[in-house]
Image (cartoon, rainbow, N blue to C red; front, side, top):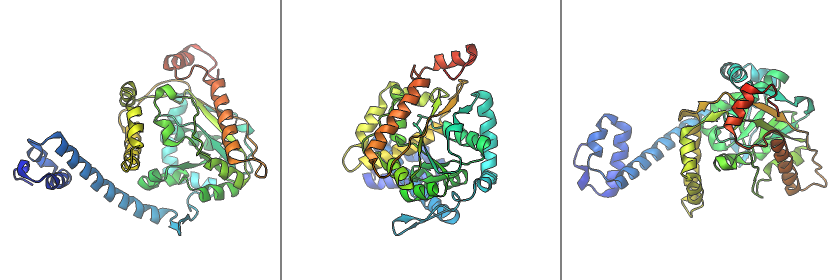
Length: 354
């Protein structure tokens, strides 16, 4: 890799650059000297794919070792998720992450939950929520619920995320497979899902607090109808304002989200670009210096939505759930995204639930 890379064939240069970047980082200046931006992009892309392949192989092996696996296209129930609540909550990782998260959330954001008394305690329940751009509200809510009720909410998340971070299973997190969700609910577990998915998180700040699930997002309705459990809308007031990410703010100002959505719908390469976007978003949301903002956060639990598995349709349940969740948001976040208003609410108001 120490020759004159400028006279190499284009494809050979990209492969050699990727191997150089991966194996000999001390020789980057020499290997990259005089290279065009196109060549740099090809080399970096090949490196990314190489690292992603190795990373996913390790994650796959770890996942099979500590949790469930796929059999004939179905998913065997996740062993960790089906542990009793008291056992799962006493795992070392759960207690460690809870200690890092919950005391800080209660002090810095005055984190609290109201309305838990509405939730049936002795039956499965499907919680439904919106997706913030940063997703830092998820774990604080899980730990707060467990601390107040003793119940560990099982979170249904994107399958790629659990593959990449299998240790999340120790927090009750499972891939969003229909069969697994139904089995958890039928076992009397509390389960949470965000039907808007990562698409809801990537729409930009101007779309904060607006529920606009596409018509195809009826999986949660199928699950609730099959398991015969109620759906409970949940909303973190000031959840979007609790973190400021300069990287996300700049992308939003530049309308990069719109460009990203257009590219993700491109033929052939669209699905790959969408997966890359998910990885970049998740990394940026946690590691691109998200700044905590001391706004009060109150998680509001709405009234349970009864689902009739005989007469309801998945589309009717989807529409009814969207309306209930949007009404809960409008009641407690009438200003939409308003960081300064949330800060005034923290410091100059005795009531943070308005």
